[in-house]
Image 1 (cartoon, rainbow over the protein chains, first blue to last red):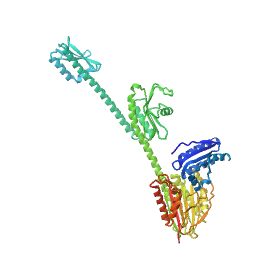
Image 2: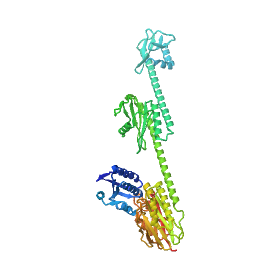
Image 3: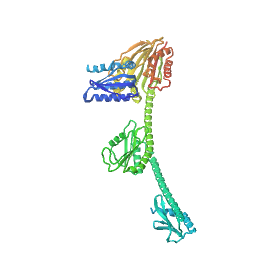
Image 4: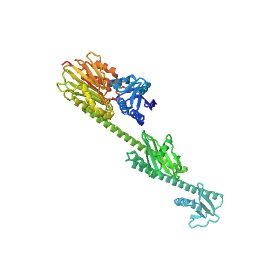
Length: 120
Length: 509
């Protein structure tokens, strides 16, 4: 089910709750959403800091991973970062198997992810 | 309405003459038929004066159209008979008039049919939406004889396409606002004199007729003219007929466009599949003490799976299994490049270790992967048949299943992140013993992630058990067994991702 994503801002950190399957079918839409959010967050020279809330993400395939990696690379180019939180165990396993858990900072909760930004 | 009678009289002269002769035979001195004061005909021939005569008015409906007179007869019976004759001529005139109107109507509708036929002829060769809308708008304007006709269509999820002929009458912006106003109304909508926006249209009115089109969010036909509420009906009807016909044409174009897009996508996928399959090794090397089998099954939306086997007698066998993220042509091209670079980095002397091959390939490919927004998981293994040592490195590729003789099967965990994500590589070499009876299965994520219709995944545990159960078989049967078990699990569901397997089984020399 594709629903409109409600993006929130907390301490200059954009929180994006994604849901469902991050796969070939949903990747184009989510890629656009992340690009747009990054561009908006970077307006005026600010560092775009994003937290992707994954508690409702049930599956991630290589298209979904590549969409997240692209956003991460773009954010770091702009001196920002993309961090993940509330990742379900089966999804977390995909990150571990592909060793992307070494690339993304993954937090247990949203508040911890947001707080980590303010601590540098 | 004095002009109504003469043509009726002329067309029905014989019948009226019979009426006249009946009066003469029954004793009348003369009989005549008048339109106003003008005598149309008199009996007997040449009779002119009707002094002392009786007369009866001829009426068609409520309209007085003439008179009949008879001389030499009197009394109420004669008067009643004369009135009956007058009434009959009046009815005849009324019928003829109705018939004339109906014939006129028929002619008009025949003209409309002909015009619609012309419309079908001129739009038959339109394959582009703006061209179709322009043609129909021009024909509608000509047909209805209005000042301007306009057509607007919003294909599902796209922007508005809008044409007006012969000249622009309303702005795009105003049309957009009008469309949002009539969005949920299927009735024609008329705007008289001045628009709601306060623009003056010099007394012209706009008649908008929304119509349904499959594959479009909104479609509307507009006519601009000097309409009155009393005379608008013919325009509403004509608009309906044109709209109905145009709706069908628009659907055809939308379907046609969709067909082309699908064909383009299919062509790209076919090309990508050809690239992928042409790069897979055609022959498996034959090595003493090692049973090898490899196969890849591309999904309909081709992913970026690949494998390779590089062997020169006297050297270890180097083999790779990889998966470029993404689908279609971009993934297939990056996969071709990755495979080629890894191959060229392997074919150097002395033979580099798997981690060294990966590090050099990674450095070379990083910027290309970044640019394409893709990355690639790779497993590289090297097997020394004499010492039976398998050295390997793994950049995020999974699953790699190691099943020693007698089991249990275990997963060899990836050591570093996939190629194309970080500029450097921190991969290390690892070694295991592959003794006779031991099996190594290097698969791709499409195996464990294969789904049945309920959404349930094949998963890692089923894979481990399957490898354990098949471990006694030759490499080819292990691969075929895994594929057929996954097919059975998916019960006919379409394969969503590529599925690739490289199976190595150590045998007694």
